[in-house]
Length: 194
Length: 194
Image (cartoon, rainbow over all chains, first blue to last red; front, top):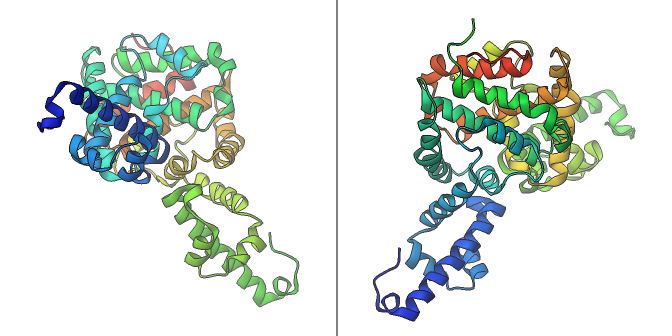
């Protein structure tokens, strides 16, 4: 979202603008993940990026828009599972090193702000959840994709945030098949048993 | 944890002591759930309870001990599922009104403090997770109980905190059987439906 002013139009300045935006995004990612949406102020973000706070407004419009950009970047790197590969997903969720936790931390620390929760939800629904749903056969694919994401996020929460000792790395061989079976029954299962 | 001083020993004062402890616990529950372990100070809790902050030290010893008591009370009321009834658990998790969210909120807002995370993890492992494991046939019951809790907490996170629209109340009839099947395959090792 480069503004069309003269500074942004020239070559070297354009590179400066891109570098400034990158520095702001990096600082915002770190601070939003650490302190949550409400806990990280634009002045603090600008300070960490080494830029004037007015540049956040110039390049991103608002703290809300900056947060949305951070969500786009972090959620894209924090996919909970590879669509169609529940065996790999179950192992990755239960093995060391743990998967990237940025997305989980951003969610945990920002979800109490309703607007931040809305931004994260919309991103998830429009992107990853929809892509996952497209790989699922059968009815209610979007709802079942949401359940698969919920399962993976719950395992991350219990294992990597609460450090539940029953889900330690040493259990991966024994527990991954159970987790895989649960993912499979939602992804590929037919009529519910009665 | 009533101290043995003269005030606590007498009858009316003993009742006062119980009422004071109750007021502190109620205020602490509300503030820890709203602001997390780090965000709620003992002075603020004492203020909300209408008591002198020194009474928190007298009755609970420390903020950490007070938090542990709050965890005991809230987690006991926030059971994610009735052991052995996955059908009811799946419906309750996906239907309105949502289940009690205190335990989830306390977890989300306090887990970034390592000591608070440890207190919550220990409580969960010693109580609910162990009880649930005792109802599960087969090997690795504790690990599978942890997976069941993880699944339920993930659904709470996605549905009640992020408000994922794919998990709305209107979907309960269609999605509960899938969630139930996932819980069943972990609890009872039923072969996935094909």
